Image: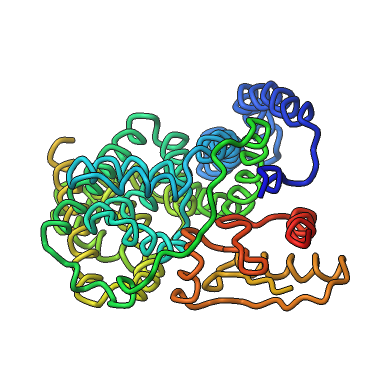
Length: 349
Length: 80
């Protein structure tokens, strides 16, 4: 099979390179002039009193939606190019010969950059087991991959700033590394469904790592169509709810419920967050508004991580290859890690 | 010719199945299109991301949804 079999609709290479170069300045211009443009529009609308609740909510919505979508488009495009260098097969090859701990660190980092969707969790798990990747290392990957994704990071960066985005990524990695390490130490191999070990490695497909760069750019566009096309509605709805909270909920309203002094808020956030399944794009704008109204950072982080990182559908899917005790161990260890993160941040800030 | 779509039933798998049918129709081929939804069946092909696309026993793509045009190209190639 030749490499051209991978090419998408026939596009001339020149056009592939020219398109991003043309779109980038347009992107920058829109991004720079967005704030003044939105201000002008809001002022010109009838009945928008400066400083009123409604005005603030409308302004917030009209500014944040295009801003977040712009950031999302750019980052998803770039991440799409980066991910074309990391196939699951390649990641498996890298992890196959690693010992634990170094393996846990590498797996968590690779979990961030390797293309992953929760519907692929099972074939990926089987592929890792076949290649002899230790179970704990596999779990580090499976924890990091959904938790630290580009959508979460873009929204955190856009709505909270780079510090919170880094904090989230850092603590997420820490949880993936330690939780994977702990699960590895627990010797849980017997809780993997027996048929998984019985599988003889299939032929598979030689991953095409030597793609021409033009094709990687195509890959970036494909990710934008795919991911932004899927999450834009969550962004709009999430920011609309966030704008409502932003404009109409009184200051410090959340302090007594999700504030620092409410010690029980962290476990409750995790308990609510684990079964709750939402896209990062839908939950982060709401959480940002809550933070503004007096919820504490640790509680908010814990809530986000349990919603995004531990999802009910994913555990159901993993049930196909893991016996029930291991499902509970997996959820329990990760939830404990998230709890610790929540308390530590409530303590520090 | 047998074309298999490997996937547990997520959005991408359904899209791939639909596009495969379209491609086969456009080429007016006499091909059997099968959907493999169980993981054990999928694991025989050694794919690590879904949806997997198998033409005559050979994995031609995985983890992505090729366009109808690309699928037609892939089919033509494996016929040669």
